[in-house]
Length: 331
Figure 1 (tube, one colour):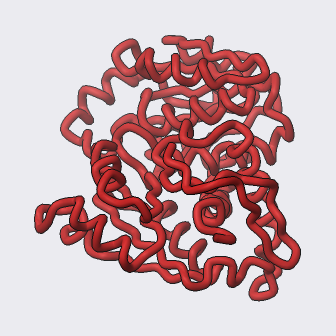
Figure 2: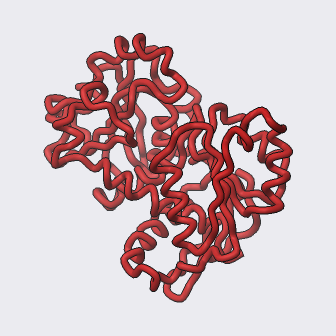
């Protein structure tokens, strides 16, 4: 993690967050220390409650004078819209340059970075290889940079997932989350964050689609409160006794040519009503969206009373707002 200075408070008339290290880049959940992750979630919860105050919320001008540039190579609903609303509700400005101009072949990424740092305070980037984020970061010393999804990680989603889990559980210590499906970018960031918060993880994936061992090793190094990570290949074994069940699409953006092969590999990994009965009676279902009903999840599950998916979606706004305050607030 590239830190932008010493610890400082994020304050307004009625909101004073605990000390949070001001971060310059957020490429991975591992860029946050565990206490900073907990503080981010606490701040997000407070911002969520205070949003009901509308224009009277104490952070409506917290980021006045700051601008956010959204650079997206891939489609987005929750991430992009969440950042737009978050920045505007904090009093800042948002610009959305065409990705063909900002991340295409018209000019070097280093030149894009050096231009943007003259105009904006922070940029959120959704692209393919995570190395592109590092290339931009190396070219600028002032620009704050957020990973809005790469092939490797989706750390903004993990923040919303953890806030949702925290709202349902209170403390995550001793709880178990079962993740069923592809060991992809969402699974990577979720594994890092859950381990830092003391949540046990059961991961069920076909043998060729498991999270890499280095990802699991990194999560175990930051695990706290006795959090355990166990890899399964049988979904029913992974879900048995879990407090929550999570899945994602079988074919992520950029993998469309692999769709038929992946569909065959993941047969048997659909989250069904029968699979959910293996979890604890009060267990709930999670999905980062977009979802393909009838593929990775049955409609009866995602649209049923145990689904938390739209709580997750809503929490994208509150956690991204908290992240922006961490990076830019009270500077």
